[in-house]
Image (tube, rainbow, N blue to C red; front, side, top):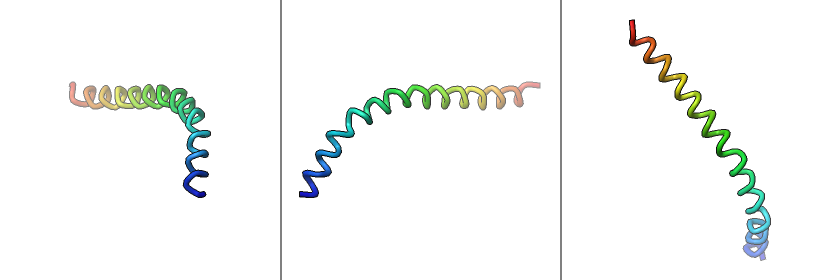
Length: 49
């Protein structure tokens, strides 16, 4: 019984998880790239005189 219950829970949650991932993933990726770009820019400015 527990196995079938967890399976049903997963089946019910999957669409919500996919929606959540589709909404959140791009924001996280953009934020990460922006932070990385800022970090590299600062590093390069420190190297340049």
